[in-house]
Image (cartoon, rainbow, N blue to C red; front, side, top):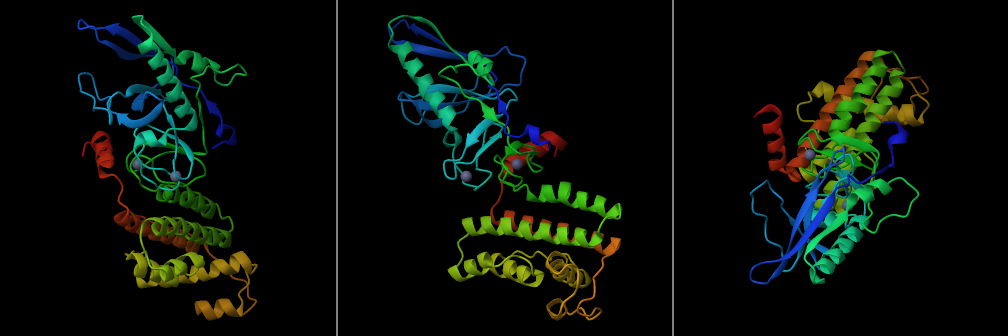
Length: 382
Ligand SMILES: [Zn+2]
Ligand SMILES: [Zn+2]
């Protein structure tokens, strides 16, 4: 992705909230809300219930035409429409880690820390200010003794985006982040800071799709073009190392383990395949070597040892490498070399072990199967 697409303000999609205040035949004053939108940009909305003081307290399911919305969590709430940005996405902010991201409506968890919360708890600061302003306007419309139409003009908000003009009181806009990805499991759009995270809709980690869709194919291209096999081996093992690190961090955050096991997993990097595999098996019952034959395991272990040599030893074997790996085919100081075949082989093994870890991780922290099923039904009719 080009860096110019990062951290750019994305204007509001515009539209107008029309509040029609009237009196029914029994003399009760009430209001009816409609949302209208005429701008040539993508637009979506969701709705929340807010206390008249301006605090969102629940989600309101808009459903389709004719469907009855869920009741508010407390009586007397206002219905507040929250419009998307001009790309049809919503900004969200995590109440726990304060991370910001963009996605579709229906966020269920934070892509960064994985905390689950109802949608109205993921409003951004700017959206919360908007909710407060909106409620103020509603209260004013209802207490003024004049029937008629009141308009909250989000078109003015959209027009003010990206310009050095004074912003309307309802102003909010979103900001593009660094990795825009469609979750492979549920198809949802996410735009997150950095590269890796949970899908905010179904809770599937995106690390495996990054590994299988970008990291490994890029490495294979490099290998096929004959470029630096030793570097490719180093990078393949390093990719696995950081992959394991992220999964373990989240497992430790969400799965109770004894302090000694926790220390064991947090105090060391995942450089040694033998100990990584043993730790993951023992602590989380995850078998990263599942489906890898003995020959493959031995080869992968050797490549993990060689990674140190390529990363820290200038490519020359030393006595520690020979002792740790049991590789007796070389002498200390001898330069190690890889081939196109060995580089491809470790790339394939890293992907296989990554898939095993991903599967085991989601056996423990399952994603939202409903979101995934909906997507599959729509996508391939299953
Ligand atoms: Zn968070
Ligand atoms: Zn997903």
